[in-house]
Length: 255
Image: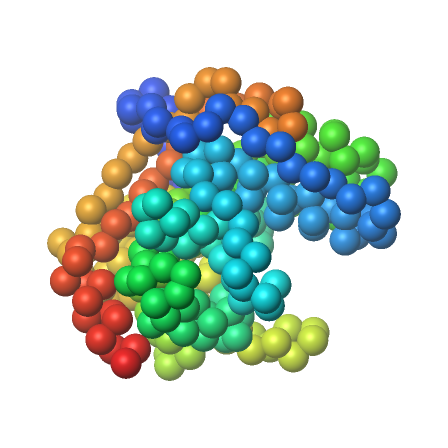
């Protein structure tokens, strides 16, 4: 649980993040069963919002829809994976997805020596299937625009480490699960996600990483950012960037 008043304090004290675009447009298919439609809108909303903040594009170079990054930024030489969760939900890091990103990290195509980031968004409600069961798509988009609480940008090198750490150790904030469909994965707990936002140094130390090898920046989004015409209420951002030395050790360890 985040400290009381932290979100409000961050919005008062942090400088504005310079978004790349002022708006994003997401396409919502008309023929999808309700449960799939709700999840699809959540996924596309945050992908669109992320694109408005950081730029990038979907890349059809990747033939397997389960392996390509959500956003590819050729000019900046980076890939971005977008995740979202409510306070009571964990972030699932599938073994297959993490392994695909490790392969992509080592590949020279379409970007050589890429920087890869995971952006994790926290929205302000739970029980989404029940809450939005009878809502129209535009009502879901409007609700997300009003109720996004924060975002944390984490280097893939840290995400990969957390995934492996969860595989190796039984620890309270990471868990190994196979889910109802038998999908092997490491799950980041909601507490760990909160720590990455509130006390990122503590989260890094929990994973036995040295915080001095990272730069941490705090921002807030500006007014006027829109998704499908709905203005996104300003929210806080924490961006974590690893040192070149840390990234080199990570890449060397993959070889």
